[in-house]
Amino acid sequence: MKKLITIAAGLIFTGAAFANTVTIHKDARFLTADYATKTEALNAGYNIAENLSMIKQSQLPREFSIFSDNPARNVVITNTEIKTEEFARTRNNIQYRAIVNVDYHFDTHESNDH
Image (tube, rainbow, N blue to C red; front, side, top):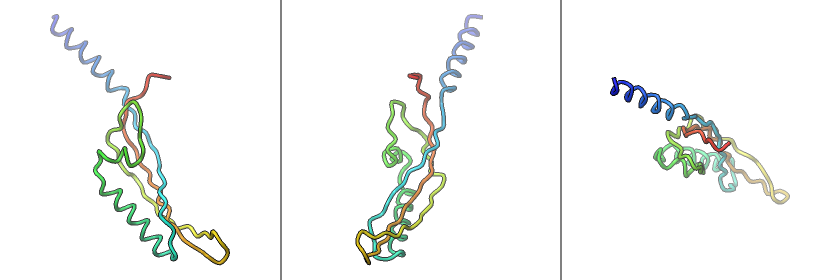
């Protein structure tokens, strides 16, 4: 009987530890350098997106600057969108840059500091 009670208590505490896991949804924005043509900027944006997709999952928290007391686990990129922006710093000098918007999520433990 003591073993049964000990096992049941262990399962309750184990379940409580897992109950505090939460999934956080975030987004990040990356900008390319300035380019003379829209095509060059778009290609640079695709390069950023491709590089992000090839990074090891264990390195993604650093890439997305996920810093907290509770480590981020299972970082997953869910959506990537690339667009170009036209701008001019001086008259008649139009340049382009790509903006790479990335949606991602990760699991972490809920903080009890609130």
